[in-house]
Length: 515
Image 1 (cartoon, one colour):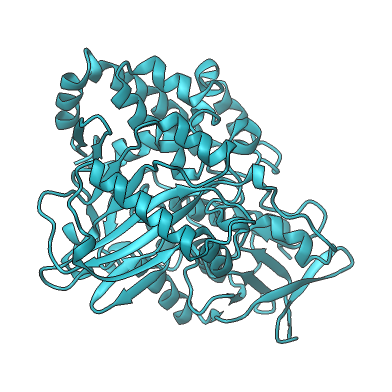
Image 2 (cartoon, one colour):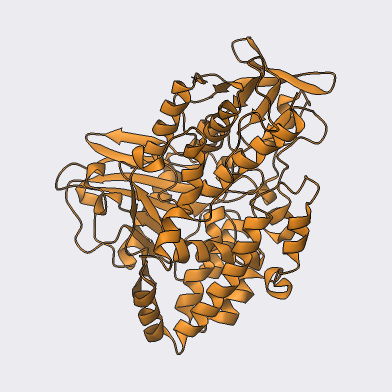
């Protein structure tokens, strides 16, 4: 189990929204949510619990956004996130509808957390059990266990601070006394320094440094450029575990959709919003591609915030500059005719030159010659993800989010070759002859399917403290009644933070739109 098993399941308790307290309850209050991604579904559920009439308009054929599903010949794949952390945030969301998370989805702690394979042949597993991981660390470097615990202490301080400030309120809101008081306890020198330098200050061996420098890629960023506050990411995984959802993470989307339907919320798919209508400086509805106008008292954007100028009628809106974009990904979903012995649920096969890989991604802006490859094999934990005797694999390498990259057939084939070359060099089983079903998601396909600039999975990267903490605001600065949720806005990418953005926006709407 993780360090604190009880807290890993329950987590810090969050205040429940109370109907009729600070929020509108009139049946006439209508909300339109643009996008049925996880953030859109979450804000729809929270607003419906406050008495709003909510309609969700989704561009794609199904709800879920990047948290989606592909099925073929009995194989089942999540196309986006492959685990969840901070499970109490999901419990809190379901509780707003009077529901209990375990009644809708089943969570299983993944053990080991991951298997790491390095280019020089070194390989080790990270256990979710603190005693086991500390024992491994003692073997990996002198006093590695002590160094790790000090590293976790920093992450714990920053997480506790985030719980009281960053995860609770939007930076656009006036700070309250509790937030200001909490800032007194921030370890300033460490927090605002370089994440990479911080990792290297705690760990001596190249293997542990490379392993921990990977964590900023969880939010599509480079370890060289993000602030040390992102040490909360490895802290969360070690302290509270990584969790698989029975049947795949898309079960969360299906459960939320059913809850919304039971509350009278409409989720309309195949509806592309082309304009946000305004009147007297306020959003008053949206227009869809079929020419219909959908009136609303508030509009919530669950998409890339950089698309708002275009939707508000700004001609030739520039969108999100490539230099500001997070990473995209090259993903292969592979169904194998056989089981793979000895592999973990999560495997990371590192490139031989990690620094060069990040130069490829963020400086040269090209798919790496030697990419680090992540493999998720959920059927190791959950047999329902593949037919009996078979294996379902999610295989991903990071890629830049470039507009000019067409990802034609030759480019896709070359990326596929490089990914399989890295797997082979890292000692991963040879699987190419065992593939029964497969599909590939390129950055271009992601951009088209999810309306993401260049396929940028997390919107803006988190390089520098401004990008990390001053993301596009949850409430539009000039247009009243217009809000943003999701990974592209505050507090950032990742499934739990997307849900926290919905809670923040729900509370903002209660404060600003109450009648």
